[in-house]
Amino acid sequence: MMAKARKTSLTNIELLARQYGEERWREVIRLFVAMVPRSLFESFMKKVIAAGRLSGRHDLTSICLREAAQPSEQPFKEALRFANQRYEALQALLVLRDLNPEPMRRLAEELAEQPEKLFGIPVSDLAAPERELAARLLGTEVMTPAPQISAGSDKPWVFISYSARDRAAVNWLRAELEKAGVRVWQDAREVKPGDVITKRIEEGLTACSHFLPVMSPNFQISRWTQFEENLAWQREVEEGRIVVVPVLLRGEVRVLPLRYRARRFIDLRKDIEAGIAELIKLLHGPVAPSNVRINPVDGSELVLVPAGSFEAGGKEFKENLPREMNLPSFYLARYPVTNAQYKKYLAANPRASKPDYWDAERYNQPEQPVVGVSAEDAEGYCKWVGLRLPTEWEWEKGARGTDGSPYPWGEEKPTKERANFTNNVGRPTPVGSYPGGASPYGLMDMAGNVWEWTASIYRRDKDGTEWRTLRGGSFEVVAVYLHAAFRPASRGDGRASVGFRCAQDP
Image 1: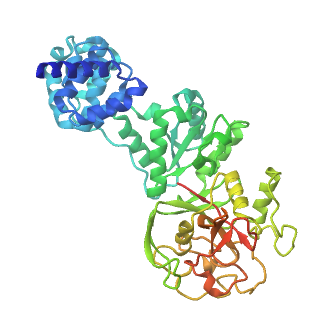
Image 2: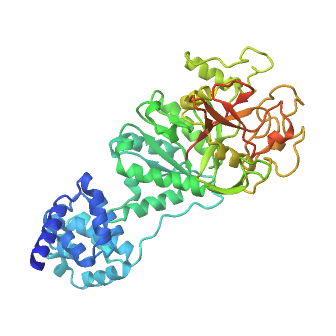
Image 3: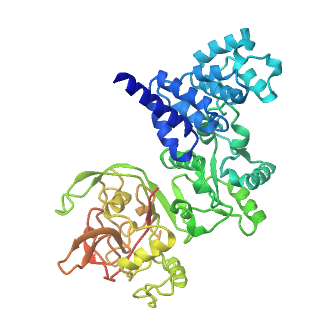
């Protein structure tokens, strides 16, 4: 029985080895090497080498070596004697040296003493690329990480992420940026044979000040661009260490991922020279705070509210009693949507309903927040710009911060210097008119001016009528309604002095 099980196991390993490099098997192979002991890893890689599957697949080999539970140099050491496997074997050994230098130090000593025994031929007979890798392997130093940008550096250093199918256009882009004094990290130059590819990418993203995803229909189907962009967004959102600047090379804006559409991007499709000039100007200009996004459709600013807990509710409100809530990170618009922004939406969407009070001078000034919109109207606008309405809990955290303060500015009661309420102005004021009323995240008009729709359902009546939660108070109400924990509701089709602001996921 044991002999039969052993035979089946080896047959399965042989089958897996024959699939080495096939896209649909990549995750299975990565999981396999991450779980098996050294003996099975060696058996598997020997069969990969015997099947000739190592050639041209250094990216997968690099990942497997890095993720293996117990990687081994032995299969690659044995492969040095075979001309059709030697180059890839040398690359794998260099990866192992970078991951664990001590075993490779011993191998380098063995190589230096008896090179012909390992290669089967004199070193002088090796092909030039093989001699270069062998020379690197003979060195005993650990490979030097990519240099870091100094804290006070004002020279941009950009990481270009792209599909290999767009390499020619990207090489031209790199040359233009370098002529303008921009440093460029591009894999074609920075990743050497034998490098741990994922490690080099991580070092590059850590060093660079900007991440430039070169967007085309090819971008989203590349596994490396997916790895790079996920790491870059993590660096920006969680660590604030890099600025993402999308570059649209080919394709349509509407097919961009939402997180790129809600960001200022450089368009190279029609006038590539003008696009490059805009990009260079942006890179040499002051770096925008990494916690702020600019929506390219309506120009609104969205501010990052980091993940974590906050003190929600208030003892005065039985339907929102004090408690701790935990939320993932999200972005919230700095200002409510204005009439000027909503006007663009109406022009682009002729079937959209005109808001109530749209023709009333008291409410229709360009920088006033739009009012007279239903929850459905607000969601239609958000969809148009690639955003969404915030939940009421996102809204509350954005308004008060984490410490349970009742108002955006803290504990002090509302005053006419901090908010528009109790008809002290008699109409909605232009957004941002009360800088002293800013929230801890720099969000404006979170108390007073106009009520704001949220995505949260307060209740549903038996006839199916939905009531949406409103937040923030308005220019008409008394001070108690400005408390960040106050949560009234209105039917979704109600059109009182209600506006909205947008939100977005990271």
